[in-house]
Length: 256
Image (cartoon, rainbow, N blue to C red; front, side, top):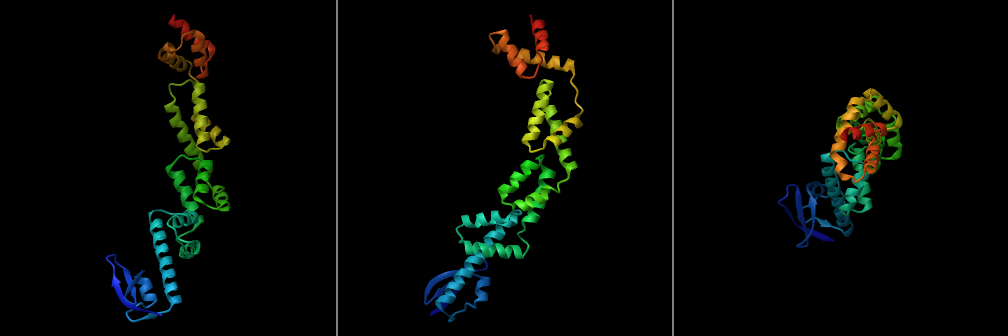
């Protein structure tokens, strides 16, 4: 048996130091203090002391988890990994996860709904990227597949088209062929399916303008011709950029 000889308030509000038999023993929160009636002259068995320390550890872990959750929604895996990095043991972590879930503070299904909506409304990421990000966050696969199947295809197409339009402006000095290649590559890299990619490009209603193509080619010849010591190498480079051989010959002949 050990006797509580002093309960001292810490500078931190709601925290106390407990002294047993004249020596500092352990810190507790106000909730633990009240729950175990830790008052001066109270006698505690070894099992009670162990239980108090365990309860305090759980309360501390819960506080850390709640603080981590206060910044944004988290998945169960994120909370679990976070608490493990703070060196809590697995029984304590499991207890905290259950408590958070019971209080509806932790719900992977709600997290997935929120995450997808945020991705669709604040980014131009396509389904594959969104899915990969949720996998990284630890959302269970069944939830991912269920929520991904509910995504609004029209919203995806709008986002893909918006991205494609930006790519057109970005690639306006490139050849028409290279423009198309870059737009498709960009959309695929953003995680869109082939069907969405094709629909987005169709929505742009792009057509090749021969005059613009020639003007872009002339500008490129002026820019890069000094890098090549032979005409054949220059032609090879320009063809790799999507320009037709006959157009290249026309522009090079104009330079002579």
